[in-house]
Structure formats: structure tokens, C-alpha cells
Amino acid sequence: MTTRLIDDSLFDSGAPPRLAGARCSGCGTVVFPRQDSCPCCSDGPMSGHVLPVSGRVWSWTLQAFPPKPPYRPPAGGYRPYHVGYVDLGEVLVEAQLAVPRAEIRIGLPVRLTTVPAYHDEDGTEVLTFAFRPDREGER
Image 1 (cartoon, one colour):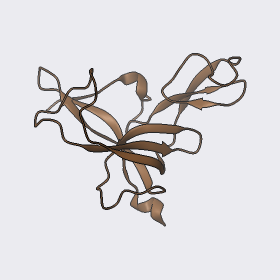
Image 2 (cartoon, one colour):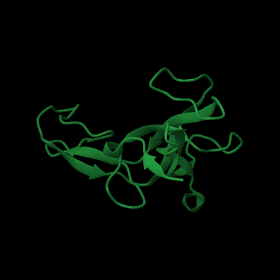
Image 3 (tube, helix red, strand yellow):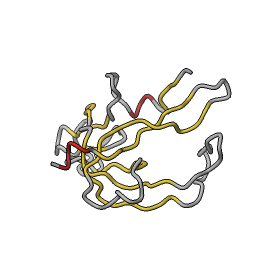
């Protein structure tokens, strides 16, 4: 089976994939996804910045209903999933949380991963980013 990332601009070019944000050269603000101007000072140029792969759940909820388009349900139909903000130290990232209900909590150490989002018409599995529990981060 072939796979591809949902949007190459969200990731750096390395392997395994890492999230690619931007940092303001004027005030140091980090953003994700990348953008051309700083939301804080509107002054400094933004440069590419690879984000950390691990962080902690800052807040979360259950996405109990299908999102609006352009969301595409998976082959088996929509199933609720956890979504939340992950504190990566420099920036909060909104993401799917691939964490079982019994384990999810604010402060949980998590690590970047990819999960299936949907399949293209040609059968290609399209992957998106998510965060899973980081067992090593619990020490």
C-alpha cells in the first residue's frame, strides 16, 4: 500500500516526519503551521523552524461529531476521536490525540506520530499528524 502525507507544508523533509513551523527573527515567536508574517510583532521575517517531537497535553476534548468539509470520513465511517492542544514548549499545536480514553489527561507526555486520515480514490493511504502517549516522557 502506498502512503502520502496530508500536506507536505506541515512537515519538514526529514524522516521520520517532524512538524515544520516558523520563527520570527524579530521577537522569536514560534507559529504552526508556517506563516509569512509574525502574529505578535508584524515586524520580523519568518524563517522555517522544525518543532520538537514531544510535549504535553495542554487541553483536550472528544470530537463527537464529524468535522465540516473538507473532512473526509475514513472507509469504515466516522468514529469519535480525541483532539486537543499539545504544549511543545515554544508553541501550542492543535492535533488529533491518539490516546485511549482511560489514559488521556492534561499534562500527559505525548510524542508526534502519523495516523491514517483517509484513502485517496486510487487507494493511497493519506496520513496526518497526531500525538500518542510518550512512555519515556513519564519518567
